[in-house]
Amino acid sequence: MQKLKIKGGISLSGEVDISGSKNAALPIIASSILSSSCLKISNIPKLHDVSTMIELLETMGASFTNQGDYCLKIEANNLNNHIAPYHLVKTMRASILVLGPLLARYGKARVSLPGGCAIGARPVNLHIDGLRKMGADIQIKEGYIDAKVNRLKGAKIFLNPITVTGTANLMMAATLAEGKTIIENAAIEPEIVNLGECLQSMGAKIGGLGTRVMSIEGVDYLGEADHEVIPDRIEAATFLIAACVTKGSLRVNRVRIDHLDSVIDLLKRAGATISFDENHIDISLKGAIKPIDFTTNPYPGVPTDVQAQFMVLNVLAEGDSKIIETIFENRLMHVLELQRMGASINLDKNTAYVKGVRKLSAAPVMATDLRASAALVLAGLAAKGETIIDRIYHIDRGYEEIDQKLFQLGAKVLRLDS
Ligand code: EPZ
Image (cartoon, rainbow, N blue to C red; front, top):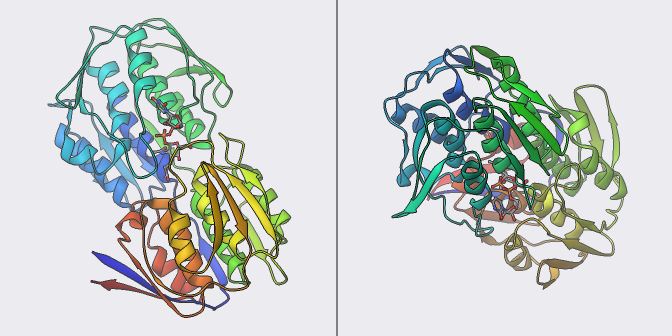
């Protein structure tokens, strides 16, 4: 297993380009199953999860053609099997995103139940209940979701709680259903809008995209499209926070400012100096870091995917702060590793009470999930001494070449083969 060795205490400086969004690319790649033609996608990030989704579709018979850097042409219009096997789903829960498209396009699917992960139970009951409402016969047996239907029918679906991939799955399923589907309390994350726009360019009839009530009029077939993946707002937030915890100064390129309102608000409250134009942000933080209280919420609230990273900022702030995680039941495990680096944090269920400390000290730490590992990288960049982060395969799932990007910004970071 590879590790990262980080020599902390260096202020980052320079420019970094943000890659395409993992959480937009995954459902968009899955949506190629819906097309009777082909789907061309650009700005695809080079991530382990994306490779897994590509491998999954290839096992079903889809063909992928490289169309230049970060661009793929996908032909998934004649799949010879409709199975998402356990050995792939267990490495990437987002494999569940093929369920809706397979049912809509082929009337059958056998998808391994994703199971839980480090941050929570991660149930998919809302995906299944919604597809059952659309007429699918779904049996759960031997750890698999076995689904079949002649043709899905439009239905009225209320999602509680708001679910991002649940919204994506049901929106994709509804595009080829007979009649109209209404999805209430839908997710409105930018990744959902990016997916919806891709479906619309394939010929889907989607109203209310980006609002809590979507209506989708089913059509008989979807055609060819050429679509660009949006920049990854979570990667952008991670680098913005890296500038702050190292008291550096960065230009972060290829971002969508309008996707980062809650993140920019927190950074300004923490004392960062920020300026931006339509696709880059300049950020620096030279003085004291101010503590910021926040609660994670569905978009446009503070994303749960930046909670761990902002906790590192609070750990180094001058004062006390409170962080409440409301989306996942076990997404505070990074606290234990940060405490080993000298952080002063008390936990009470889903609330972290942080007392800022002047310095973190380097320590051997272990990544537990994707965003927790990003937080440990940030802590290592700020800490005095050399931090070794183990199990960094977690971070490679969601950050493209993070060590090389940090190295370009002046960080002393080395990838070790243990
Ligand atoms: C997506 O996960 C993202 N992943 C997550 O990013 C992100 O943290 C999450 O949305 C919240 O924004 C992808 O898009 C691939 P949810 P998802 O369904 O869709 C409950 C990262 O780090 N729920 O929105 O799986 C669930 O338990 C990853 O990039 C049900 O109860 O999350 C949770 O409490 C981590 N039943 C809440 O809803 C369901 O059927 C929100 O989960 C589905 C979800």
